Image 1 (cartoon, one colour):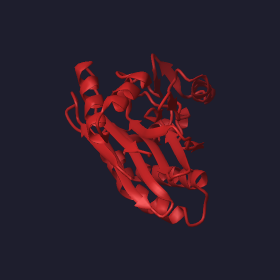
Image 2: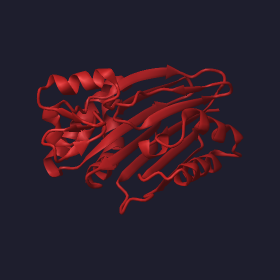
Image 3: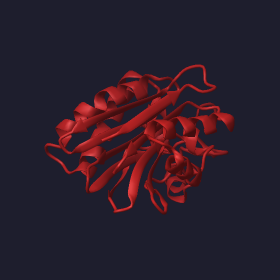
Length: 242
C-alpha cells in the first residue's frame, strides 16, 4: 500500500510530533501523535504503539485493542514525563478502516465525489467534551483551553499523558469506530491540528485529487498550511486505498 509522510517543526523551536506506520497481519497500522509541553510523550507513544497493538490484536477486536493500548500508554507516559500527546490511529485493510482518536488530529477519507471526516475534534467547542470537563468541578475553561490552575493550559480535551490534567476531566480513552471502504474511496489522510486549523477538509480533498501521487499531495498540503502562517508543528500522512 502506498503512503507518504511529511513533517516539519514549522514556526516552533522544536518538533514535538511523532508518527509510526507499519504493516501488520491485520492491515496497515498508522499512528499520529501530536505532542505538547515537550516531545517525550509523542516519541514514547510512537515507539511503543506498534508492538503493543500487534500484541493486543491477538486477543481483542481493533476498537478494544485501541482503547486498551491508548490507556496503557497514557499510564506509562504519566510515570515518566509531564508532557502529553494527542493520539490518532487507524488500521486499514481492503474492506474497512478501524480507527481511534484522542485529541484534535483528524482522519479523512477522500472519495471521488466527497470528503468524509472520520474523527471528531476533541476540544472545548465540542459540547460533550465541554460537559465532561466542567462536570469535574476542577477543570476550568479559559478561552478555548482547559486549565486546572490558571497557569497551565491545554487545548485538546483527550490526550495521552498530561497527568496534571486528568483530574480536570482530560481522558486518554479514545473515541473508536469502523468505516466500511466504499467503491469510490481513493485515499486516507491523517493530519495534526497545525494543518486542519489552516486547511479545510475540502481544501485537502482538492489538493489530493489534483496531485500526481501521495508524496506530492502531502507536500502540497504542508505548503498551504505554511503559506497560511501556521505556527504549529506539521505532520501529514497520505495513503492510497486503491
